[in-house]
Length: 124
View (tube, one colour):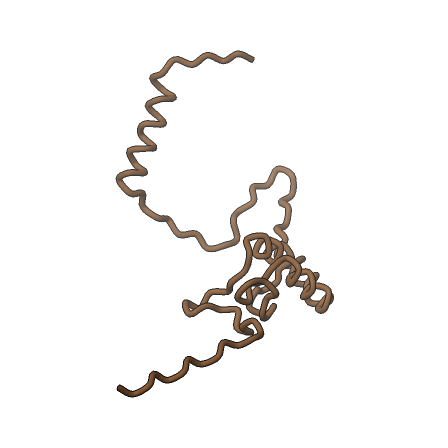
């Protein structure tokens, strides 16, 4: 039998690509929330310092420090504006009405039934 070919050596440095094969950015939940608050696109951060190139809080803070002019401009655009007193604020984003599944319909009916038919004792 022929000898098996030697496996390719693994790279010593972490992978520079932050997207997995599915195309999503790999980042910790804390890093995602901080980036959302600061208005930073995770795709622009680049390779993270975490395991397998995962973007961490430290990476987001370093990116925000290296690009201070772009981050505040995006953050102010992402902040919602307050409505004047007495006026009703309307949502500015797109809205998609999703029909309820039979399970959700049953849960809703039982919750309403419980509130309507069960005895209630308010102790305040």
